[in-house]
Figure 1 (cartoon, chains in turn brown, orange):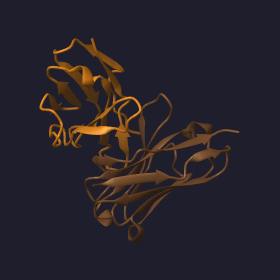
Figure 2: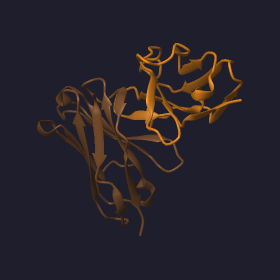
Figure 3: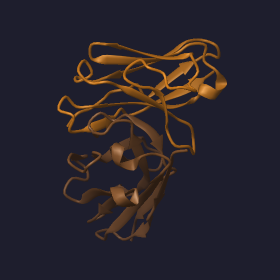
Figure 4: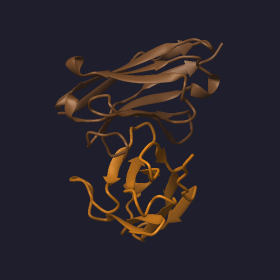
Length: 122
Length: 108
């Protein structure tokens, strides 16, 4: 059974940093691309970032480019999102999502985690 | 940056057909995916690669593509289909993955 478990969310002040993690199980992690998707309270889904199976291709939404860094550790079956210079508008539920392909550039998400809530507020 | 456009809301009577559209200039070259999200739940894939249905998704869900518009059709809408629906695709270079703004389906 595929499981994606996010962690690392919480309350953080504007301008500070936070690191999210996603622990994956139930599939061969290093065969697939992975993504972070967020949803602000009462709003729609927003793709944040994606990373290919071997970290060779990485993409970011314009809203987070230069502030967020996605990475993965295939030996630990884990996905990460380092979030720096956080803003109030980054407040959202952050989902980890598995791609059905090995590259990130299509958005074929077949499994999602339950999400971890990030609140940016002073 | 790339955008996908969906109607904010669609209303349909129980048992009737619902159509939700999504438009984007790269859709002739890139597959579209449709996700259903019910309140308090994570999204569920209901259509992939424009028109394929994942196992476990009812046959009343179908997808189609014509030029720059893709359409999610729900035939014989049930009460449990009331949800938000999002299309997703990528720009022509495959650099950006983008969600449409979402469509709230209301079953009357």
